[in-house]
Image 1 (cartoon, rainbow, N blue to C red):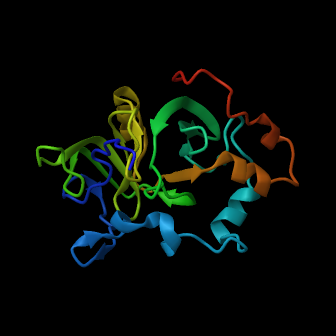
Image 2 (cartoon, helix red, strand yellow):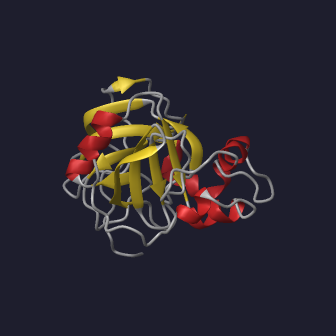
Length: 213
C-alpha cells in the first residue's frame, strides 16, 4: 500500500460522443482488475504488428512517438504532447499515470473512441461515495482508459491525468478516430537501436514542461 489516493481514473458512465467500446466482464470493467497483467501484453519475444510498423516510422523530434500520432504519452518521464502534421503543437506537459499494479497500458495505434466533457467515474468513487469527476475525458483504450483533468500529485488507476488547462486542450483538439500513442521512451529507443537520426533528437530531460502552442 502506498497510501496514495487514486481518484476518478476510469469510468463507464453514459454520455459524450463516439462509440462506447468498454469490455465488460460480469459486472465489472475489464481494466479494473489487471490490464497490467497478460491480457493486453504481447509476448516479450514477439513485437506486435503495430509496434513493428511504428518502429519503421519517423519520430516527432523531441518525443518517443511517431509522426502518425495526434497525442503522445511517455510513461518514463510522465509527459505528454499534442501533434499536428508531425510537429509538436502543445507540450511537453506533466501528467499523472497509473501506479504499481494499475499501470497505464501502452500502445502504438490506440484510437480516440469517445469524449465526455463532464464524465464521472462510478468504479472509483470519492471518499464520500459520490462518483469521482473526470472532466474533459477523452477515451482511447478499452476499459475506460482516458485523458482527463485532475490532481497531478496522485497516481491513477490507469488513466492519463492532465492539469485543468491541458485536459481541456486535449479534449478540444482530439477527435474520435485520432491516433494516440502511449510508450516508454527507453523501450522505444532500444527497439530502434539500429536506427539513428530522429532517435537522437529525443531527450527525456529536455524542456521545462511548459505548454507550447
